[in-house]
Length: 104
Image 1 (tube, rainbow, N blue to C red):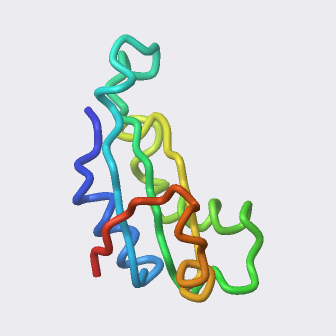
Image 2: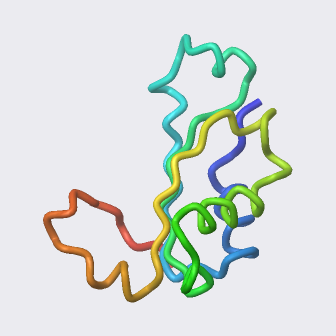
């Protein structure tokens, strides 16, 4: 059974206190994929938190994965993560291709 995006959002808000968070369920795009057969969903997360300051991209991803640990592998099969500090998020170039809507 795939995770509810609201559950993912709540767990990330509690663990990382993001100023911006978008959780997108991409499970429908992976119908027929072997991982989809197990019931785990595919998600894309864009998260902005000052808790990422001073951490590498790999460390930031680990922080997100650690926050969601209880959902792997039964409820989450795949997770794409884009993680920024507030300053990094604000200084992105408008042409970066991100079209996230702020959810504070």
